[in-house]
Image 1 (spheres, rainbow, N blue to C red):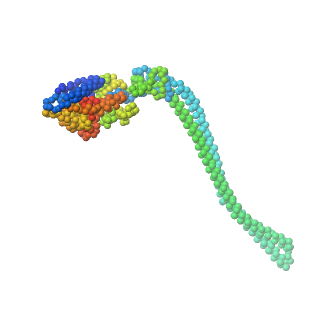
Image 2: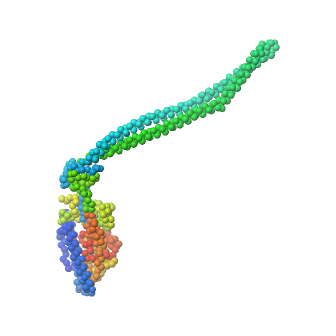
Image 3: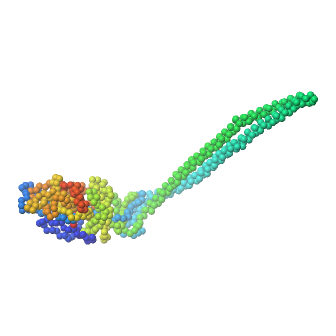
Length: 594
């Protein structure tokens, strides 16, 4: 039974044994720690009672089911609602908070710092560092940046000059190619044809001169042959004319030979010469183009290197200057200064937040929590993580307000197991769960302790009995059912969900039947160590926020679904389930049937 001051809810009391008075329904809770101690006491009493009962059985082996015998307290099997819940410890934290750390890349000395607990306003100086190494590196960086900037400027000018030089070379080679092509075309179309025409003209002239000379010689010979004329031309005249004809024949032959030489040799050779000149001009242009690209590429690479060097040096200088701005940290909004160096019970940073202390880079020093975003962080075991989801209702008790219960909702469940716990205890996996309270609570501060009960499911119209009435022997789970004749009988049962006090009965019992809360005289029950207690031993080294062995949150999933709230039936035989074992059965649930 739990009563809350804000979001009040009341749990009905469990059914009392036949010979015991029912506990008060509305008795106020006694707080987180106060509530745990009675459980331990009850467990010790029950175990002691079992030990005495076992001794009595050994000394009185006859035991039995004689009519009218008193077998001890009994309780009725009830049908009704059963809340399947899990209870864990948690811590108050702020969802949003400002972390103050040495954000420099150098170790720094604290020059001034506000005391812990100081209420700061926006713009107030929180902490101031001093770092000689940073100041020296800034001065060196300025010199380096200046040199890199000069080299970058020189490389840029060299690139412009190289582009002009190679451009001129390419243009010159291109013009040479144009001229070579022009010379070839000129020869092919004009000069070559002119030479052919001249050669043909020379032949024609030689032929014409020869014809005239031969006609003149023939005329003189005919005149001298006429007796009436009495040979007016002398022999010398005739010889001279014959010599002239012979010379003209030679001239015609020479002109014909010159034409033949021109056509066969000179003209083709001249064409080849011009074509070679064109090819050479093309090669020179290609060379100029390649040298242009190569020269420009080298100049561009030099410029890129100089630019990259300059930008890197400039960026490093800016980072140094930015670091210099981080030497003074101011509050960006109102808040409360809380010294927090990131240490915990599992490791210690050995850092002192005080003037003159040397702080390593990235070392956390303090936080300024946003008190409007407080929430509860708790953890649950891997066995029940599938049942925990955002939107489930949670009931929170605070250490400083033990008489009040506050309601909330789960807003986030860890996707992966807690990394710190995986390193500390790899055999046990736990998941972080964040609970958002439904109301603001006066005096709530980060770091406060709490106890969180998460309602995993509400089963309606199910059979349930106290966990103390369920026993196991080898692979069988059973209860001692009271018979009408005054005797008892072992009734095999199949279990479903359970919490700290009650367990669901899937089969084996009927509503209204009564079961014994302790083994009857003459019955010897195996007292093997409950599995949950073994899990308890494994959880001794749990990190803060995990309680140890508080009520089974979920039975093994080997049975059929009862269709009510998703409860699963376990494999028959919870080995070693003895009276009071529910107090130590795995993850602790804290609710009776509601």
